Amino acid sequence: MEAAVSLGILSLLAAASSVLVGLSFPTYDLGFLAWFGLAPFLWALRQKGPLAASWLGFLFGHGICAVAFSWFLKVPEADIPLFLIMSSAFSLLFVLFGLLYNFVDRRIGRWMTILGPSLWVGVEVLRANASFLSLPWNLLGHSQHGYLPVIQIADVTGVYGVSFFLVLVNQVLSKHLEGYSRRIRGVAGLSDGSQRSPGLGRKSLAAALATLFILGYGGYRMSEENTPGKRLRVAIVQANLVLRSTMSFPERMNILGTYTKMTRDVAREKPDLVVWPASSLPMRLPSSLIYFDILSLAREINAYLLVGWSGGAKGETEISPAPAYSNTEYLVSPVPKTVTAGRPAMGILRAGSSFPLTLAPPIGSLAGEYRKIHLLAFHEYLPLEKWVRWPRWLTGLDRSFLPGEEFKVFQVLDGRFGAPICWENMFPGLFRRFVASGANFMVSVSNEAFYGDSAAPYQILAMLSFRAVENRVSVVRCTTTGISGFIAPDGRILDTVRDANGRELFATGVLTRDVQLSDRKTFYTRYGDLFAGGVGTLGGLAALYAILPRRRVPDEPST
Image (cartoon, rainbow, N blue to C red; front, side, top):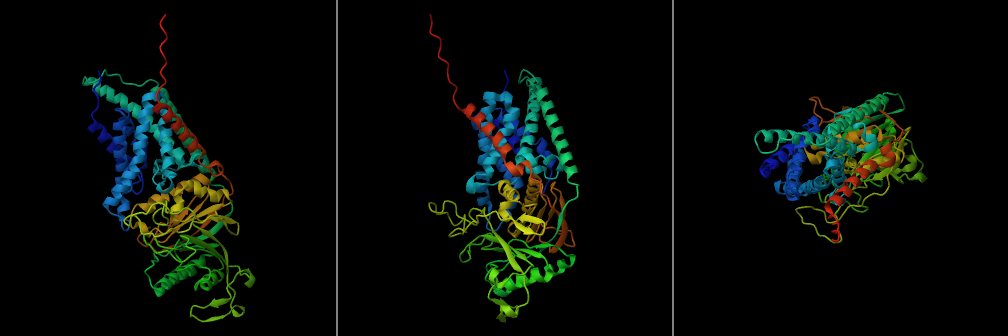
C-alpha cells in the first residue's frame, strides 16, 4: 500500500514552482526555469483530491504574484492590503486550473499530456478575456521572450501556443518526477516501488520531437527576416517628463517646449515620422492654443508628427470636459491644407498675438486621430457603472471616460500603422486588428511613469516582442519615461533609448532608426486566437466530461 504525501510537502512544492515560474519573467529573465519549474506543481495537483488541488492552486497564484507582480506596490496609492486583494483574485484562476486538472486527471489521466496544456491555455484565455477583470500580463509564454527561436511559432498560435508547449514539456517531466518519487518511496518502504507510468517513453519522445519542430520552425522564420524591403525612417522622443492635472499652464507649456526642442534636434537625422509618447500634449490638439504650434513644427521639420493627449493621468481623478476620451493620438502632416479643409480661422503665435489666417505662414495639417478603445477598469472607466457604486479606496473616478470605436490606421509615405495606447498593447486580439486593417508596422505609445522604477516596463516590452512576432511587423515603442525603442518582426529588441549611464528608465533621449515595413499577413493576423480557442475548447470539454457524473448502467435482471 502506498502512503499519501502530506499536504504540507505538496504545499512546499507548489510554492517552489511559483517561485521558479515567477523568476522566469522580467526583470529576473530566467526564462529557462519555465521549462521545468511547473512540473512539481503539476505533480502535486495529482496527489490528493479536488479540495487539496484547489488550495495548491491558490498558493501557486499568490506565489506568482509575490514574485512577478511585486512591482504593483510601487504604483501610486497601492498598498499591501490592496495587493493582497489583487493577488487573491488573481489566484482564483489557478484555483480553477488546479480543480479542473485534478478532476480530468482522475477521469481520463492517460490523455493529460494534451489535456493538461489545454486546460492551462483555456484558463489563460479566460484571464485575457474576463471583461473588466482581464489581465493578459505575464502569461507563461511571455517568459520566453528572450528565446527567439522558441517564440516564432506565435505567428500561428499567438503567445498561447508557447504557453501550451511549455506546459506540455512540464507535464511530461512531472510524470518522470512521479516515477522518481515512487522509486525513492519504494526504497523507504512507503510504496511498491513501481517507477514508470505507462507510455511515458512515447510521451517523452513526442515532447522532444515537438521541441525540435518548434526550434526548426523558429530558425526558418528568423532566416526570412533578413530579406530587404521597404523601410520608413522613424524617430522617437523620450523627454522623461510627465504632465499632471495639478500643473500650472506655464509648467505645461514648458514640457511642450522641451518636446519641441528635442524634436528639432532629432530632425537633423531626416526622419519621415517623429513619435512623441502618449500624454505628451498639455491639451487637446484641435481648437486649442497649441494647434498652430504643433502644425507649424511639423511643417518646419518637414516630417510627420505623432503626438498624444490624455483626458486624465493614470492615478488621477480629473476628467477633462466633453468629449471626455481617455487618450487620443494625433497624426500631424507637414503638408499644408486649405482653409476649407479645416484649418482654424485664426493663427496664434507663441508670443500670444494673433492674425488673420491669410497672413499666416504655411503650416502642416491634422492627418487623423485615434481614440483609445480598450480602457483600463477603475482608472479610465467604471465597470457596471449603472448598477454598482465602487468604493473610493478602489477608484477615484466619478464617471467613465468614453472609449473610441475605430481601429484607425495612419499613413506616412509607404508606411501604414496603428497606434494602440498603454493598456491596449497587452491584448493580442486588439493589436492584430490594426495589422489586419492594413498596418505594415506598429507604433506603441504609453505613459509608463505610473509604474515607477520597477519591472513593469520590462514586462510590457517582453509582451510587445510577442505582438511583433504574432503579426510579423516592426514595433516602434515610445513612452514618457521608458522603455522606448525599436522591435524587429522576429521579436528582437533592436535598440532602446538610454542616458549616458546606460539607464533605460527615467532617461531623456531620442533615437532614430529605419523601420522595416511588412505587408505579409500571418496566420495569427488573419485568424486570431484560433489555436487557443481550439485547445481551450478541448480542455473545457474534457473538464465537463470529468465533472459530470457517470451514467450508471442498470444491472441485468436476474433470470
